[in-house]
Every structure is written in structure tokens, then in C-alpha cells.
Length: 108
Image 1 (tube, helix red, strand yellow):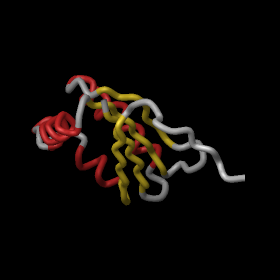
Image 2 (cartoon, rainbow, N blue to C red):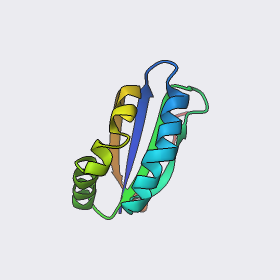
Image 3 (tube, rainbow, N blue to C red):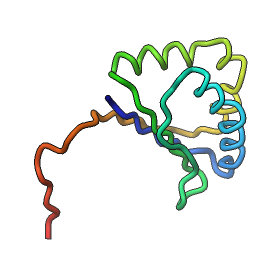
């Protein structure tokens, strides 16, 4: 299993609009498309920052799922423009879930 962590930097003052479109339009779509959501929401310390965390079985499943979702008529003719108009930039990190192999000791 892998986890995708995505952080969106939204255009100034657009956080509430983004959250509304996401929860009312994108979120129901993601659920219909069986995307395994872990967490999403506006940052507690930055109203113009939004996170989205999703799980996938593999890198290949992630690619197939996202290619199909983001090229679908439902997305393109639905919330895509409103969502993209709110986003300034975003960063994505994908990690493999598993047991920590070594103990990490903080520097003192």
C-alpha cells in the first residue's frame, strides 16, 4: 500500500471557495470513483493551504486511477475549472506504507 500526500497552496483568499467546491462536487466524485481518502481539509495555520491524503494499492493503481479520474468527462465538465482556478501551486509526495526499519533518534 502507498499513501499520496498532496498539499495545495491556494490563491489568497480562495480557501473557503475551494473547500466548498471540493466538498460539494469533488468529494462525492472521489467517493463514486472508489478513491480511498485518508484525510483532507484546510490547514489549521494557513487558510490558503489545503491537504489531500489518499491511499492506493500500488504506484500503478495510483497512476491508472488518477489518469481515469482526471481525464473523465465528469471531472472535465464538472468541478475542474473551479478547482484549478483556486490553486496557485501544489506539491505531491508518495510514500510506501510499512514498518519503520530502523529507529530514528532525534539530534540533541
